Image (cartoon, rainbow, N blue to C red; front, side):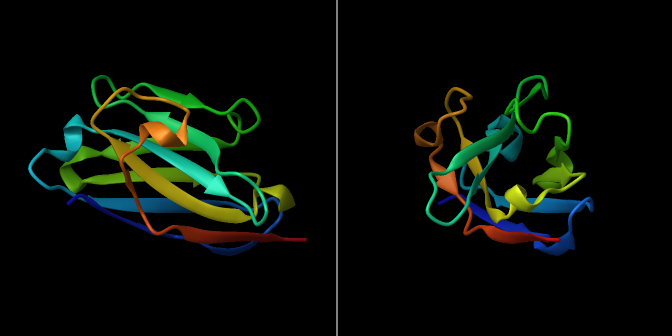
Length: 125
């Protein structure tokens, strides 16, 4: 069973930055073969795509509303995917989840087979 553990969340003032990490514990297949993504979910809202990164070429893709402020990256040697968040806004407050799929990369949460428990990000004014 693949395990994903996020960390790095916390409370930050608007305009600040945070870097989230997600450590992947593989089960059979190597981390480098997985497409990885970050999603977020605010209270009372649906889970929302933030960014994904492909296993094959490290190509990245972002939600349009966040692409200028977010950077997703991965370190296959450390089995870790990161999300650097800059210029944080109040509306970025949410629980952030990393997700993994051995299948096709996608913006849809249903495409991802494995999820972490989430890390809370709170942006204060």
